Image (cartoon, rainbow, N blue to C red; front, side):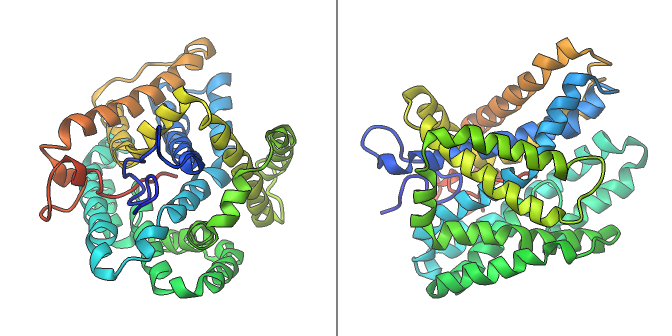
Length: 369
């Protein structure tokens, strides 16, 4: 039987009364990670266009979200690995559709749907060329939904090597040492280079979740009083990493930030999972990771494209506007999914097979930056 939320990254976690308490924090960590993805897209991408210019509050939001780059996606991939353990043990025939074909279908479909709104929102003066570049992401495994094909690849590689768990972690660790040496070219070649770099960067986190689950569970049980020193250490390293001058050991600093940041996030996830209201909210969001990931970039692009924006704003407005947009986009994504998935399940999973609302929620997982 699957563990809570382990059938797919976006599968409804069986949390709540009677569901193994020790895994509640996994859903909570997944919910935190996907919300941070929305925050990044709003604070770093959306606000620069919706409110021309930048004020102090927007600068703080943008900087804070940028500082969390070493945490956001590593945390999401770590959780993805944790939730893949059941599927990795199943025969190929049982996982080809939910774990491979669904991922591929959803990635290609939403990348195609996103191309034109993306081009109109972010390069209105060069729509055709940008849209064609966006369409090419289906080949280079890039773009707004790059997490999906990487997760597919990670799962296949992990399943092929599942009897060599420790070695898989070691090989992934070696790959991590060389991600920064992969140069980024131009055009489609650059997109493909970025996919290779992301594979080397993130597979180690997926492998840790998939093959060292007891270690991650122990990691999450760290005492709460470590949070202040972890936060202080993270800020100190981030100041160096994201300062005006690039550090000569920036790749080491990024790795250090990932370890410190994930440590703090796991502790926070465990603590929040002990309180009923936050546990219920975390479980709800964790069960909708896929639609949040898919819908919110589309909604943000449409908002930028089809509206005149909000005009130049001061710090007092931005203070509440950024979190309001994050909440609105997250809520809209969940609302669209809850209302549409029974009738247009093909938006979230490969058509055919056993249908129904429950199967619609086994489509494919989440992403972001």
